[in-house]
Length: 61
Image 1 (cartoon, one colour):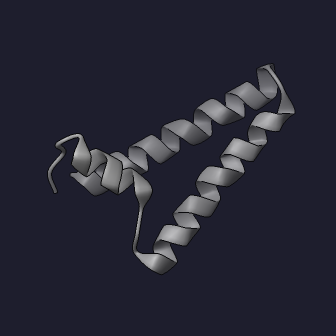
Image 2: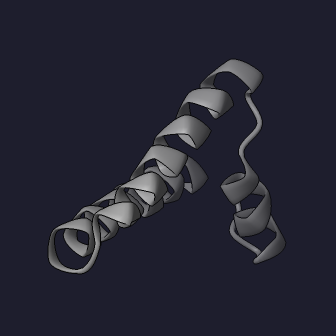
């Protein structure tokens, strides 16, 4: 369950930042890059900040 939520949140963040880049300011693409780098980092280290946040909010595996 938590992995599905993490993927959904990452996808939502990317879509929102792309829309903001198109309609507001191109600098929002840095947020897209940030999400991508965090996904890449978590694949190597097996640690994800969003997972820790969701667990503290009471979401169970």
